[in-house]
Image (cartoon, rainbow over all chains, first blue to last red; front, side, top):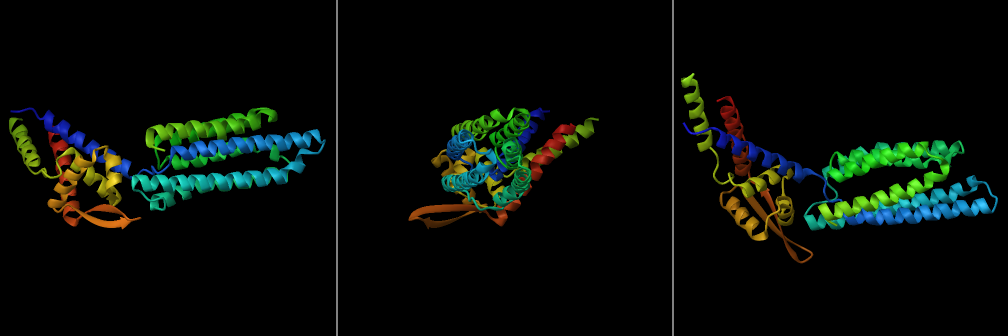
Length: 206
Length: 112
């Protein structure tokens, strides 16, 4: 009797091909490496601007709280810019790989990431109301990391790594002296994004 | 015991013979899997997902179209031709049947 192992192995291999192809086809892979790098660079610019604003207030012997409105505007602009970059790069990449940005999967991703962003907004408001806005950086890293981890469930592995790195860095930042927290913002929102963008670009496309 | 093995072997042979020759090829299996998962896909998406050349993909898509498992829709996007592929009802049925055959092979051979 011929061995039964050959057809068994072939059937298993084909089932693996089916599973992998179906998974790959439904993963949200319109994320582009370029967006990571551009968002990282814009974040570094925002961190430098934040540092300058805070130093100017310090040297003018003004309370740091007086800088909060301009910092709020600065970081809201940074958020809008990052969302714009992400959307534009996604659209460009989606056109290249034959996918659509606006898809049921894209909607799932937004729904998954939204709670973490709402949490960040609520915590920022809470910290600002209690005069502790200067301590919010670690919270932003933590909540942003949670949002990215949620996106990572529907996307390629580097996205999950980025999310986990942000969560870890956020937790560490909360324990660091306040003088180092802004540096951590540059390291994470700037450096992590640039490294992630380079990895994504090389492995999954720009 | 021998009778049980013989029965298993006969069932395995039957399952092997029932495998659809059109789908039972790596690239075509990949195309059908991607189309079943997404509902439809264009040429570039299939090429990127399956990591195959244009020529290779064209040949296998043609075979699936000839078998009536895949249908294509051509349109112009920004004055460039854009072809989208989707599984037909016959293609869906054939894919499910192929999947059933594979599962039977794994079950039967695994028990023997």
